[in-house]
Length: 112
Length: 110
Image (cartoon, each protein chain N blue to C red):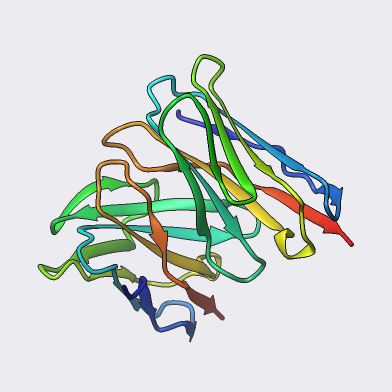
């Protein structure tokens, strides 16, 4: 069974631009969660989607948004990028209900 | 505020020894517990999950859960240099996001 895939793997953007990251979960998984990871802050929860509905949202500004499609693929968008948005963005899929989450390889975003 | 606490380390153990990693959690309603291994520059990899009190063994790994003490641990037997990584503990308590600790850095010395 194929794992979680994320595209692109690396991105370099300029302050003020926007970016869209994509995540394809493990086949059959309907839950997708997004995390931001920086050296100082560890894993910070962004949001969770289940069957196209946002089920939970972390404490991030409105510049961070996401959605999930009917095939469970998910995208997250960051608008008006700031230098502090430079991080590893991780997507994890799960069958839901407190079951195991499996992470994708991540997208490393650098904002200059 | 639900919290998961881990000693940041580094925890240094000699090759072949048992590494013991510990985690405490604040939410008494937590139901599911997970250990992830993360190598530098890579994404977290699930290595163990445990749902009920007691021990769960998988190869060289043993997860231990004590809900009364709100304590989860991971034992790595016959530690190898390839086990050197950061280990993340995570807890789930129903309809809320998975809560992660900040991780413990393990260094296995050859």
